[in-house]
Image 1 (spheres, rainbow, N blue to C red):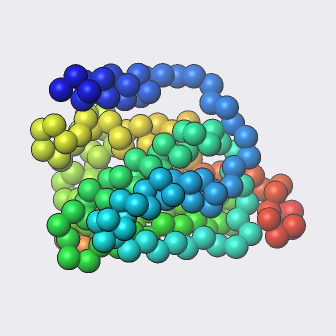
Image 2: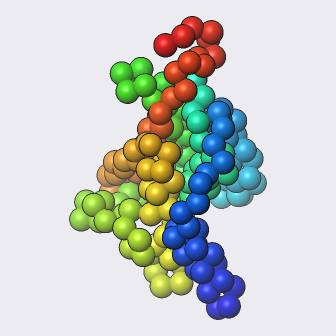
Length: 184
């Protein structure tokens, strides 16, 4: 219980902290690969099929790499939990460039239990959770929301009960740095 309380306090401090992020150009495919490397053993152990889909020539985003990795890790951990006990376990992660928005879209899709429509509007609220007591603090998604918002982006969710959930993070692209060498 003391470890759980310490984790809750750390999450509260991270949620409340309003510090200037150390921002630099980031390769989202590289950030995602680091997160997936952390989770690869658990994914294999739990029989979760990983599908990656990163578009070629993605522009970088200007971000605090640690904060963005934390948001991605929270979303991946939630996806893993949502797939517990499911017959088909598939995690689909990737990124593409949305030229009309001038942004890079990162996505995390799972084949989990989904989120009831009544709860979708509340999932980014601090302390809101659908998990059993002792299984979560309700801060993970609100922290993700705050990180994405602080980076000038948007986070959205779509879900179908018993089919899965898809999170999309839209982050402003560094438009003067297309990997293909063209300037936007």
